[in-house]
Length: 78
Image (cartoon, rainbow, N blue to C red):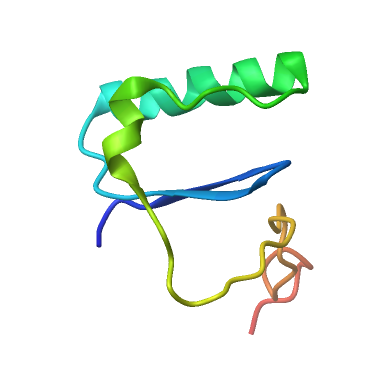
């Protein structure tokens, strides 16, 4: 499946697949902002509900790496 997003909420992971336009991404951002502001569970917007799917394999979510040190960031160039 293409264009997949996973969102971590208090009740678990929500997988969305087949996103196809700015309206889907805007709905995700709006939903995430409301969730973040209220700090409570919010209802998934209607336009996103058909995109929900259950992932068969388990997955662990970790903090994103904002910076990965490498030879260039440390000033070492071969």
